[in-house]
Amino acid sequence: MTATEGVSEQGECDLGLTTESHYELVREGGHYETMHNLFHELGIQSNILVFATYSHCGTSTLTDSTLFKALRIVINHHPALGIIGVDKPSQKKTGNHRLWEARLNTINLKDCVEFVQYDGEGQGLQRVIEKSHNEWFSSEDKTRPWWKLVVVNSAHVLFVYHHMIGDGRSGYVFHRSLLAALNEIEALKTTDGISTDNGAFIVNVPATLPPAHPIALVQAQLSMLHAVYIFLWWTLIRLIFSNESFLFSDACFSNTYPTPLNPFPKDKRTVTRIESMQIDRTTKEKCVGACRIHNTTLTALLQTLIQVTLATDIYPKARLGFSRVAVDVRRYLKVKPGVDVMMNAASTFSSPQWLGRYREAGRDSKISAVNGAVPGVQLDIPLLWQLASENRAKLHNDVNKSKTALQDYLTIQLLGIDNEEFASQAFPNLGRISNNTFLVSNIGEFQAIKEELSAGWSIAHVEFSAAATKASCGTAGIVFNVASVEKGELVVNASYEEGVLRPETVRKVMIGVKERLKLLLE
Image (spheres, rainbow, N blue to C red):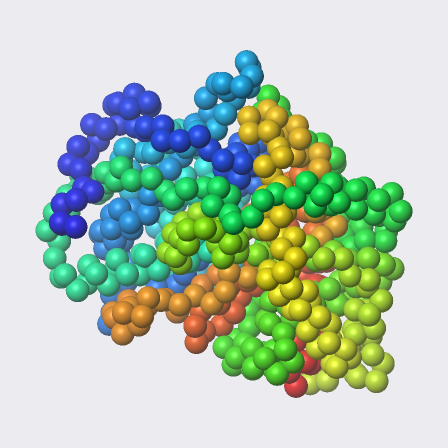
C-alpha cells in the first residue's frame, strides 16, 4: 500500500454533497444485522465498546496526528468500519422495510474521534465508559460511521461501536490493528502522503466488502425440534414456577415493546449503569493455575462464583437460577475467518441450576470469613470447585457435542427478515427467555501480534463492556463483561439497566464475588 492510498484532499467540500452520494448500497442485511440495527433504532441497546490503554517505550503519547495516520491504515484493513445501515422498502410486503448494509465513500476522522481529559483513574474511567454507552449514534446522519474513538488523557482509547459492526471479539481485532498501525508508522518515520484540511483527515473507504454473514457459513442445519423444545420448555417453566422462584425477581420494569412505528422516545431509551471489578495480575495467574488443577476454566469459575453470590447474598429464597455464557461460533464456520476479522459471531449457552447446592457452597458454617473479608462471606471450597468443574464440563460438552448454543444462534432464521416482522415476532419472546438470567461474556486475553511485542507501542490494559438492553426485550439481570491483557490484570464490567435493579444490589454482587475469590485462593 502506498502512502497516499485511502487519503482524499477534498476536505470540507465533501460536506456539500447529498446524503445519498456519501454511501453505496452493498447487500441486504442478515437476521443478526437486522436485530442489532433494530435494537439501536428502537432504543433497546446503544452500543458496545472495548477499551485499551496504550503505552510507549519512549515518551510518546497519542496525538491526533499520529492517531489519524494509524486510523487510515486500520480503515483500509477492515471493511466493517465503513458499513452503516439503511432501511429500504421491502420487496416482500408493501409497507414493510428491509435493512441494507451500505458502504460509506469517505470518513472524516474528526467526526469519529474525541479527545478528552479526565482527572483520576479507576472510577473516573468507569464513568467515561458509562457516559459512552449512554450517547447514541445519530443513525439518521448517513455521512458518519457507526463507531467512534474516545481518547482519554492521550493514553486510554475507547473503541465504541454499533453492534451491527461486530461482536466483543471484534473490539480486540480493532485494537490489534490500531496497535500494529501505530508501530508501522513509527517504523516508517515519515508523514508523506498525509494531508489535512483544518485538522480534518478525509479517508476514502476501500471498495471491499466485509466477509459473508457468519450465519450463512455455519456447518449445521437448524433443528425445528430444538426450536419447539426451547419454546415449550420456557413456557412450562414460567407456568410452573412463580417469579419469586427465580433470580432477579425484584427487577422493576414495564413489559412494553417498541415497534418500528413506535420506538422508545429518547427519554425512555435504555440507560446503562456500570459496576467494575479489577483482579490484579498475581491473583489472575493464581486463579488460572488453580482452575487447571480443578479441571475448570476462569469463565466457569466466575459463572459459579456469581451464582453462589446471587443465591446466597441476594436471593436466598430463589429455587432456580439461569446462567448464560457467551460462545464464539467462529469455530463452526465453513470458511474460517481468522482471528482478525470484524463480524457478529456470538451465541450463548444457557443452563438452569437448582440453587440449593450453590447456596450450600456459600454458607458452609465450618469456614468463616478471614483476612479482612466481608463479615458473613463464607465458602465451602471443595463444593465450589466441584460446581465450577461441572459448569465447565457442561459448556465443553455443548461446544463439542450437543451444540445447543449453535442451534440457538441459528434459531433467529425462523423470524421474519423485514423490520416490522422481526420486531413483532422477536421482542415479546426475548424477555421470556432472558429476563431472569445473567450472562458472562469473556472475550479472553488480549494478545498482540507477535511482531508487535518488541515494538515501540504496546497495550498495557484492556476492558470490555456491552450496553444494557431494555429489560422487556432482553435481560433484566446483569451482564458480566470480562477482558484481560496478557501479563496484566483482569477487569469485569457489570452492566445493567438503570431503574431495573438497585445499584447497591449490583455492587453487593461484585463485592461478594471478589471476596469469595479471595477466600478460594487463600
